[in-house]
Length: 116
Length: 115
Image (cartoon, rainbow over all chains, first blue to last red; front, side, top):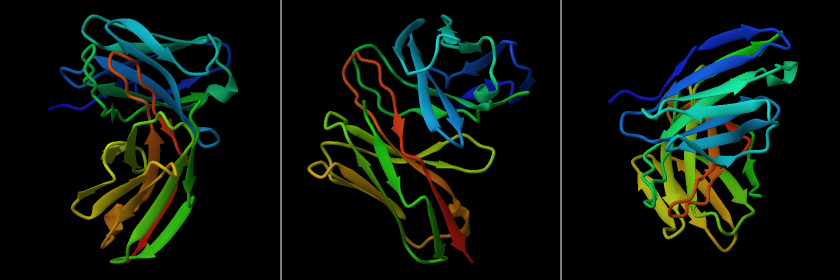
C-alpha cells in the first residue's frame, strides 16, 4: 500500500510570496493533518481536515490555510511568506470514519520550504 | 492546552545496550500516546503506541510503559543496533468519538548507537 505522498519535496520562495503544498493520504484514509517542524519550535499542529471540512486548528496566524478535496487529497497554503515560515511541513493521514476512533497517524516525507 | 516534555534531548548508547526515553504530559484527558522515529530527510515513522487503558505494550525490541497517575510514559529499546540511531518523538493526544484530534509532540531525543 502506498504511503502518504507530498509534493513538492523542496521549495524556495522569497518573502511576501505565497506557496501551496499538496498531500495525498494513504488510500482509504479520510483525515489529513498538517504539522510544521522547525528546529526551534519542534513539531506543531497546524490543522486537520476530514470530509472536506477543517475540524481542528492549531495556534497559527490566518496566513496559514488549507483545504481538502472530495478524494481526500489536501492542500495547504501560506500567504505573505515570512522568513520564519521556513520549515519542514508534514502531512499525516488517518483512517478517521465519523464517530469511530482511529488513533494512528501516518506521516509523509514532508515538504522543505525555504523562505529567502 | 496539552504540554509534553521529553528527556533526554540526546542519548548515546553502546550497541547492544538498552535505551530509555521519558515523557511527561499535562492534560489528564489525553488517552493516546504514540512514539515516532524520524531519520534524516524523512518524515516521522510510527513505531509503537499505547492507549490509556493499557499500562505496557511491547513489540519485539521496543516497549512503551504508561503511568496515568504520574502522567508519564517511556520508550524502552533493548539490544540497540546502529540502525536505531535517529530522533525519537513522543506525543500525546485526546481521541474522542467524532472529534478531531491533534498530536502534541515532545521536543525529541537524538539517539546515537555506537558500534
